[in-house]
Image (cartoon, rainbow, N blue to C red; front, side, top):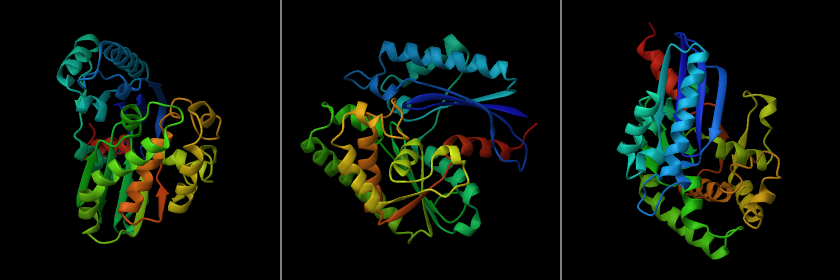
Length: 309
């Protein structure tokens, strides 16, 4: 059965088409995305403004057309942090449905963390033991830990790389004072979730998912994506600290020249690195492995588990 998965994130609208079967690996047959940076298209009241709604509607319409061209028998469309936290979320969803016929399901932060954890568990297997997973998106940070396929604890915090860049940095490169203030803010937000995660005991495997973690790992020496998904890639706390000292003094255009950094995300990688460093420190993680599977794979796996007709 060919499934289309439409992920409306805080940075991009991303469509993958997968030939799904019970017990099969959810490998995309087609992959398309466009950057819309919804988290930067909010007004002072936290609502997605008209320009953002138009960009989102256009991207969803194009995705739905492509899914039909690819022969997708079912389109699973969902939205995450930027839409979830927008004060006009219901109006945005209604407008998108009216104009495109696509009904977006807004995932809760906990569901986002839970589904990402499912994908990580399936990728690494039962031999990994207890897993603690971190995922940094454009709008939120998800943290989860567990020894089974469902996490014992799952948290979603409004600590996404795009959101924090938009809310905290108004110069390029960011001012040292703003960086220090943001560090303090992130640390405070992590206190309670980190305490609860640590209460379950140490993880046998710590994992990072998302483009932010892949980029940070690449910048600290991990293999490029061209070497495939099965190469072990890690990010260490010392390497991350050194990286922050380096990239925080660069402009976004200079960071975009670094290998592995896309121009769409170069402006927000400093905030993403600060979140990663703070989360690893709060959870006493000296090293994390980078997992190529994340939320979209979790959505597909859950759908396959429910049975395909």
